[in-house]
Image (cartoon, rainbow, N blue to C red):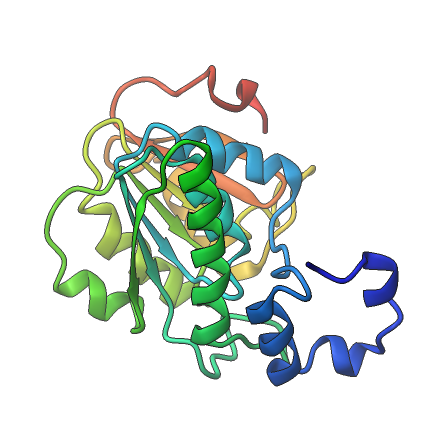
Length: 235
């Protein structure tokens, strides 16, 4: 059972952010995985994942968004989680980190809960850089969630490599990609990639279009009309 939030708040920041202590607490379930998305973004991920047979998440951290995906995906679907873990300065804020051991335990608990409720997806871990996984990949992907290395170069590479596997009607979601929007938040790298490909003169890019966006997340869809019903046209 997780410690109450009121108790967790008593811990000083240097303890709350200590990678080894957090891994122990997150892995054993004493503290929840740090949530990197808003409730509205979680709702959007749920809407996308419940129709997906194969999902790739680039960047797992402590597993909070993976928990959302596991709970939403159909039984027997495939969830592929990609994260090299270790120290990556442009993937996480300074001093933050996560461990494979803790992340696996978080996702395993989510799978058990999903199995009891309605059936769980199959989860495959790829402890590697995103580009290394993509270069050996084959087969379509219904949803790619790009939330790994947030540098512009790395985000552009993730988009270039993984979008090639998304069929017509499939989606790519960019996290931290709305820093240039009046109601949005984000970081310079993902925001620059989304702006270059999907906003302004010449956008949308190659048959892709913005399907939904909220808070820090932008979702693009390959081909067809924008999924106007999805997320109620938020953005």
